[in-house]
Length: 501
Ligand code: NAD
Image (cartoon, rainbow, N blue to C red; front, side, top):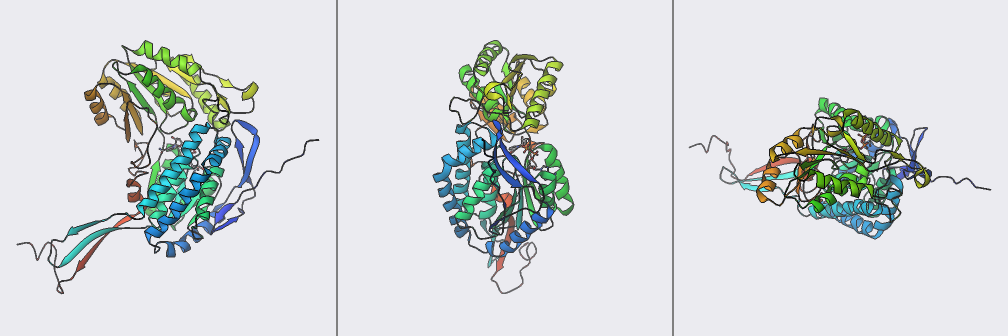
């Protein structure tokens, strides 16, 4: 007789303790490759839980902001060391939780490691400027000051990396944190925060409130004691968050959707470009904000390139990301899969030519997961919806063009501006494209994905609101500049007046 297995029940993390949520409901964390596998139950929190977490963070801020930054950084360094030791376990758990193949979940944990080490290093930098005063016997400098409680809201596609991009810089700068992780992937955020706790973070410095967007995310964003909000997710939700923050001028950082492009010139190494298109388009099942969902190809090499691309896409093996033979995992959930199916229909109705994939996979080994074939449309008009709107699935649209100017016009003709790429062996073409492509990230001879943690990450237009994640640029979001003047002349000195002659 089969015995019922009680799923593991996880809690919120508030003021240094794992505590129950106050909501009656619970969130099921299921494996998207096999929905029968329940990873655990997480609290569906309410405003009351958010308030407790913000209160704890506000109280902890009083001491944390005064803890020397190199000391704050030592805790981050220890956390990074623990992550290194647990990388393989956390990667496996992440593949079970969100489906991407093991090589990619290892990369996700590695990104959290890199970011945590990087911000540990910032603890002994956090540079300001010293500069001569315009007046005698006066000293001038600028320093970075923490802001207070940071409210962080994250998506499911990089469930450990993205929380780390926000938590690590927030902490090293002296802020305290309340995180609301994505409801589809709470376990990977749990693992990251567990590591921070083990590394010695004082109670209340980081708090986690699980739950859905309206129930837990919205009260966090609007809470009057939350001084800054960092959000990664859809443009639709980002707009709501921006509007919530606007009336009180709350500092607000938004990283949102993308419709990224790879441009393949007629002088490109075509095999390299096909490699890039397959990795950029189908990596993480197309569920990356930087996914290459448009491939614009010069007419002279269009037939050859699309022929190779189609052959490679058809050979991809779709399945459970824990199976070493799998090239591409499932969509995150039924709703996301339905979005993919909807856009395939839209593409067909718009007159694009479906030449690979196009179907849900739901029999045999795929029966219990949310799988879809790698899908390619060719001869896509850049104005079609499949070439304009973010699909967030394994669907590539190829678009022919005749000149670099035309390719750049196609590239820039969308509302998003996150990542772009060009394959060419002509240095002039490469530099012109880097100058003219309207995206926050531009690659040459590499796909649209692959950002490194020490460079600024983010987009323009409907992708972002001017702030950047990663690298020293992140410090500008998590601190305010404070200018300090020390007059040691023992007399009143009036800037712009006493020194005007
Ligand atoms: P989503 O916008 O649905 O959810 C993101 C987070 O916001 C989740 O934690 C969710 O619970 C929360 N949320 C939802 N409604 C809310 C509300 N009213 N108030 C406060 N919080 C709310 O996005 P998703 O489906 O989790 O992620 C996919 C999207 O994220 C895609 O559009 C993708 O491009 C984008 N993304 C962007 C980047 C980037 O850096 N630009 C990185 C990864 C993902």
